[in-house]
Length: 137
Image (cartoon, rainbow, N blue to C red; front, side, top):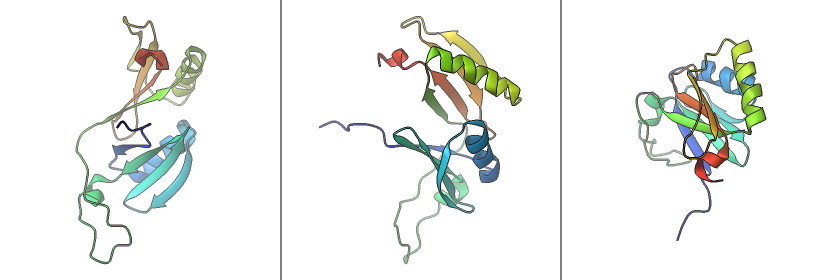
């Protein structure tokens, strides 16, 4: 048996307010949920991007918690890749530059000739926008 898709992707951020502003205003994602000091969630295509405060998510749920989600989290920068066509990547590159966000890398993958650009969110997470054919999609 194989899962049909990845439903959620999680990144951990030290400043939820800065991350919320970045993902809503710069990346244009729709916020769908927020718990102050713990998390903010965004819709992205058919999936959901979860942004967590790692200090809050390592705490076990209280005995009376409505949702007994187990503790989780990580420290250090993570990585997330958004899909984009070649034209979209070019527009993203210009949009990011206009907003003072540095592009760390812009190249084509030798195995597929697909393009990727890399940049960082305010928490230092490595973000990528790539043509899906890097994975044969």
